[in-house]
Amino acid sequence: MAERRFEDLRWPAEDPIVDIPELSVQLGERLIVFGPNGAGKTTLLRLISAVESEGGTPYASYLPQRPYLFRGTCRANLHLGLDTEARIRAEDLAMRLGVGDRLDDQARTLSGGERMRLSMARTLAVDTALVLLDEPLAPLDLRDRETVASVIADALAGRSAIIVTHDRDTAAMLGDRMAVMIDGKIQQIGEVAEVFATPSNDSVAAIVGVSNVIDGRVIARRGALVEVEWGDHRFFALGDHQAGTKVKVLFGGEAVGVHNRPMGESSPRNLFPGVVTEIRETGRLAEIVIDCGSTVVALITPGSLDALDLAPGSEVHVSVKATAARAVAVGEAE
Amino acid sequence: MEFLADVFEAAFAFLRDSGGELGEVVLLTLVVAGLATAIGVAIGVPFGIWLGLGSFRGRAAIWTLVNVGMGMPPVLVGLFVLLLLWSDGPLGSLNILFTPGAMVVVQVLLAVPIATGVTAGAVASLSPDAREQLDALHLSLPRLGVVVAKEVWPGVTAAIAATFGRVVSEVGAVLIVGGNILGETRVLTTAIVQETRQARFGAAVALGVVLLIIAFSVNGTLTWLQFRGQRIG
Image 1 (cartoon, rainbow over the protein chains, first blue to last red):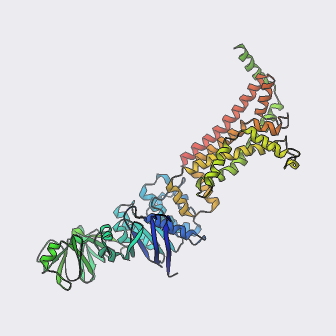
Image 2 (cartoon, rainbow over the protein chains, first blue to last red):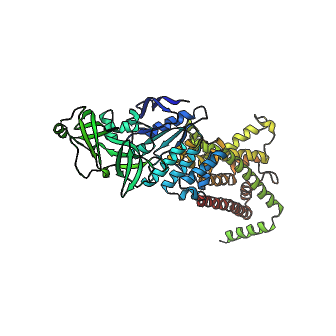
Image 3 (cartoon, chains in turn brown, green):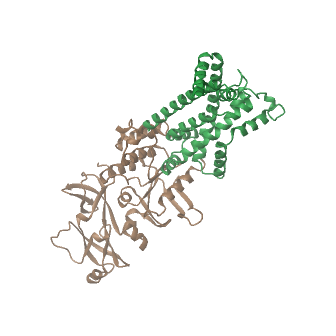
């Protein structure tokens, strides 16, 4: 199976909440479906789950947004519907997700985050080629999210996943590609960083914002910041990850300053030279796409655009305040 | 007051003096009501789970039929079964009219809608989250039944209690198809009718007390199971 392809995802027939002519997910790919509340994301997952159930196995393993635990112990819930091998995998996953010591407790005594983690262990333990996760990190706090995200990424290795979220961090931590869904339709689909940096239209920009996502690896911790190796550059961002941790650094386009000459000593820690490749004047602000080795998008006012006299090909200097950039881990430290 | 005192004195005397005859009536009552409840629950609870969970065409119509069945007058059901089992009737060859077998049959017909309706009501009250989780789990049908029955356990025990209450207290249908034959088809309720009609009020009251004791014991046990289930939950 090179890819899983779904056609005519449409429900209900009249006045559909979801209307997607075609959606594909590659083998081993984690596809994020990103959108605001009420976009039809959960309905989409239910539709795909229903399509996958037709004709029996193999079906997609599906984690609902509000996983439900039945009367009985956590272990009984963890084992529900699993064969012996899957039960062993589920207990191992429960351990790694931090609920391994709760298995003999009554399921009803778990907190919201623990319920999600126990259900996650069961969902990931099912040996299906496709896994569907609905807001998997929503009930967890930021610190737990990174651990859980790395366990999810590990458990999904070699399998395909469709992950629904309205949260940028979740998209950045878990996604390979990202589809932006608004009013039941996919508006844009592409690499996560690309979609965040270059929304294809105003409505996508309004939902995802104009954001930058860069990949890197932590070199060192410096107080409240981490120093991240980013291509040939060093990038400082908020974080407390150990050296060696693979991270994504997120910062908004509004956090990027554009200058027409090198800055002297200044408070922004991140200063890079670059070349303007594209200028988009959408709405009240201008998006400046700058190649600094890899792409950074700055969001500036038309007044600044005029003052700087920018055009494609202009050589510029870019600054990003470290305190406006945040690193999130995407894997264990090596 | 003197009349009532006489009645109660006669009731005590009846309980003291009645030997094997009362025992036989009590035993048959327990066997017929117990069997009818067991069969009714064995059919009605799974059927109720299916009806409560399902989303299919005709569900509302089936639910309506079940509700009608829950309120069906026992004498009508008794008459219907009598006609079926009559020697010239379609099932006359079975030759079970005026036997405990016929009484079990008629009471199962009364029991199934009660067990179904109460269970389906409990299952229908499962939260949307629980339903979505059940969909996501892709359980085998028997496993699904067990998980749901455990989840709505207080509802299932209520269904058993309501079913047993219906059949053990019922008199019209068993009288019609059983015939209240002493030593063969006489149960507590038909015996109470018999004694009352013959103005032997003491005996009638005594039999009523025995019926109450049975009802209390069975429902007490079920309530204990119900609460135990809730504690576990």
